[in-house]
Image 1 (cartoon, helix red, strand yellow):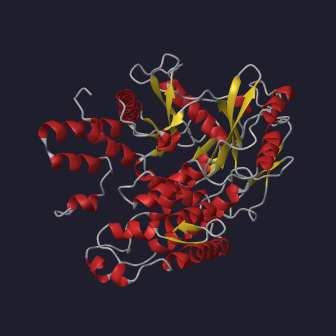
Image 2 (spheres, rainbow, N blue to C red):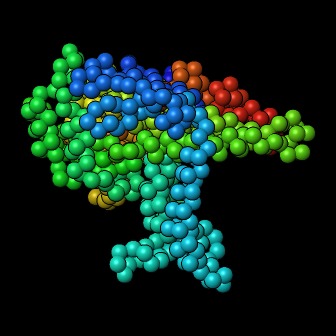
Image 3 (cartoon, one colour):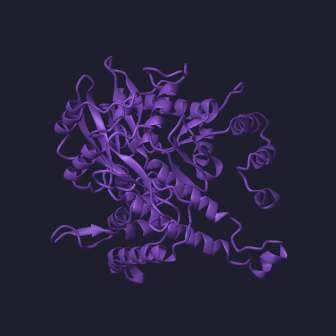
Length: 486
């Protein structure tokens, strides 16, 4: 499967936590069996049981990467996660995808948005001018209605697919980086995207689970349980994100469950995006250095390893699209931190139970948890609400620091849409985690280094020693350390 001895101020570590969650400084978690992901290759190894379905490997030509792609020979013939060498090099695929993106962004976003640009003497000064631009409206909403430029861009990103949605989701949590109206529009992409047809979702669940040998002994799932899961499925999804959407249902003897169904055809879209992005990265890496750079010994215009970084990013998306990987990630996180069965004595959060016998690459079934997403938690001034929210903040900090410094197993996508405020039976509140598509591992050497860095900064106030330590941990490039101005 793909998968301290010193006093510390948590506020100083939170920026480091964000930095460590990025691909260049984290290594993908490799759990216990299933799919393996590294910087160059995406490979999927299915469950041993093949009841009701069999595997076949196609020749290289159908893969947009130029490598073999594994297809599932079953009722739908849907492609499973590809097993390519990233960046096999199909220029036509990349060119077609670039044309699609240019047409969508140009016609649906740029042209209407430019018509909303005010005259020069009407443009406000300062940071407010960008907020003014993104909140401006143009025709194109509901019949006779208008839509903001921010909403236009958000809608375009949604149609481009998960590769681009990932960037927008990150910005949706950062109103300090982008204008508030744009951040709010992107935040919708975290769990409120346009869903795909529910009948198609039911077909996927039926075809994935009917005759599926998900039991530990390879036995097929009981027909009555699959029928109950389908018959109790809500008419519409309760949440829809870039990779899949979630329904509520129930299973005999297990109560309410959440059923996560992957969007059909999504792997092909990501494969085309990967070919495009890797092609751009290869082109930029190949640009020669400018004369001034060559005098300093630099041979390339851009010294960053763009191809390997892009490959890492794409690999993470493919990793997230394998729901068997997510199921195992969730179980591992629960073993560490769940209030029901976690090993941690310091941190206790709510993690949904996984029903692995019902989990395939495209369908994930887990315990249903009632709670309120942190995106929906208001800023109530009542003393009780304030106290509850402060308790959630404390639990969040404790959990993040434990993941970062103690276990090294870190939830890699903890935006507010994946965190829940849960009320226990005794009236207290608890923090809940959702969406375990990607976990990151923090090596012990890095964890020890961070603890030392905090001690050096807090007690010795030795910034040079901290910078040197971060250089040894490869968190700061050597050229920055060698630059006196930097």
